[in-house]
Amino acid sequence: ATDARVELEEIVGAIYDVLYRNRRGIKLIDRSAVDRPDIAALWFEGGRDGLLAALTIYLRARIDAGLLRNAPDVDAAARGVVEILGFWAIHRHWDPHPQSVSDELARATASTFILRMFTKEA
Image (cartoon, rainbow, N blue to C red; front, side, top):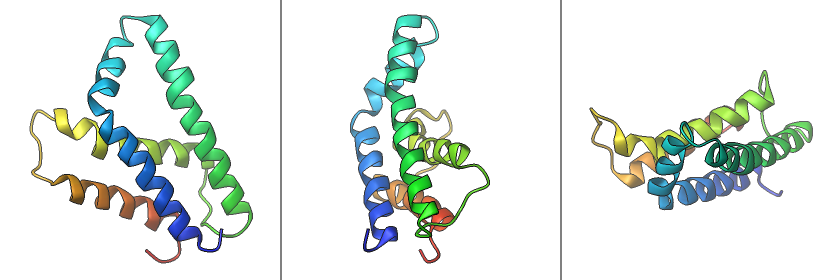
């Protein structure tokens, strides 16, 4: 990467966009997983765990190369990234007492949190 900050911003944005576009289906699968072990296996092991593994590998590689800030636990940090993106892209839409935030501001807020965690300047 020539600019790790830009690279991370693009990755975070791409993940956010996929989650946002598929938010209804993801929410349905997430809720159905409680009662359907077959759906739980597909979603958690096949979907979310794959994303977490890829993100963890990416973060470790960039941290090891000195391009991103270290985290106390990279696995936990990757999960935190997914949870931040998941809240802003998906779960806020079903909040029983929502805060009025535009989709653009939600995406920018999630990105800013993550960039400030891993980059020296954001």
